[in-house]
Length: 230
Image (cartoon, rainbow, N blue to C red; front, top):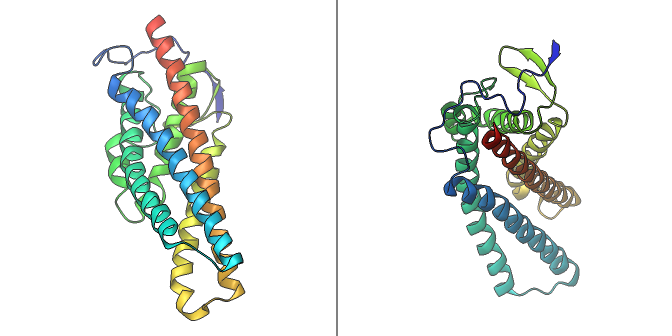
């Protein structure tokens, strides 16, 4: 393990000029759409949780409000899933193609299909987003990198990606446990606690995801500015 800075913001050995030096309109759309959908889905999730708690406390609810929040959540989640996967793939591919960053822990194509392959999707998405955070931070600021091996690099602040992924896995685990035990536990205090854990993990993972995407997009803009100036 050693500390080096092999990637200054203006060194783009191995980078390709294919597609131009600046971000394409499609990349710009993906950057904005991903963050927007995270905020929209997170807001609808918070409203849905708040409304469920209100109904639970008062005993009165409106089926139209419940249906609207559910429908909005489902639509925004489906859109978010598609856009997030495409955004992460395109950003990861361009990290090597346009910025010559070759210390990637996973190949873009493998990581893309890793979203859909059981067991692999427990690991590869986090590796993919870690590559984005680390690569664009180095390319945007020339931050000192800690070389861990041939394709392993660490930079300060990258721990937040792991925290996000752990909170997401906690949410998934709580969802599975909730629906596996709901018929046995009924309306017990344990089920209520599991519900709270599930929704808290979901809100935390969404908040962290929004922050990470915002940071990656910001660092990406800086990296493109350096690339244009190189």
